[in-house]
Image (cartoon, rainbow, N blue to C red; front, side):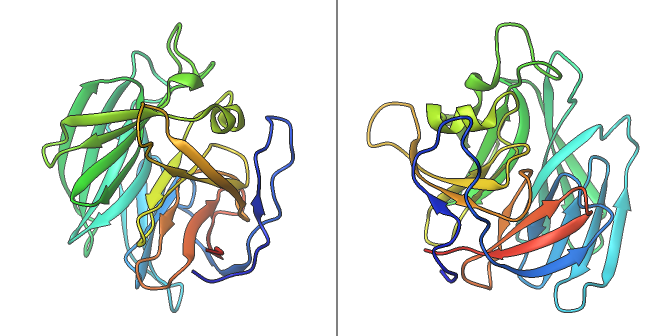
Length: 261
């Protein structure tokens, strides 16, 4: 991966400031840049609750867009490109009880192809990524708005799924990362090409490198990395090594950062 050492930090408590942001290589304005971003290396897809914009990275031009009915698409949070499909995590947030669905779009036209309804689950589905022949999902839980009684951010869960989106295994998040999420939860996660897992929270300008544990059910924290945008969903660029895409929701901008190895 490319980039300097700026932005890395050792363990932090809940009140520590975020590390210095990693260098930014590109910013693309996108009115849909509110919840997350996905990339196929040539295009980026800006994600909002009920709309998506497809942009050419080289020019910043929007070449396709989709708008859904808000009653059917109240909260799409993150997406990933899988072949010719854009596969998106969605939920009924902030309504309760929490329900979730997977919304699938054609990457060329952004036509909505189908829905996989997951119904009730262990939280609100905020993340879906493809890695090592499996689907990886995050179910978020919140202390307050959108949360359920007796289940707060500490119940946030990483789930490995098969091709039919059935749970195979699950892990909880380490305490030092949960403390940074609070009172919200995990909004983004993406596996890098070299097989490392990176996650983001809701509002801090930082992401966390995690690893599956050798034993037990708690993910291992490796490092915290500063980024230039405050939380929300992320995606590694499949063509440019070390480039992570994120969104600056206040500026409605897609942000490409260079992350040190």
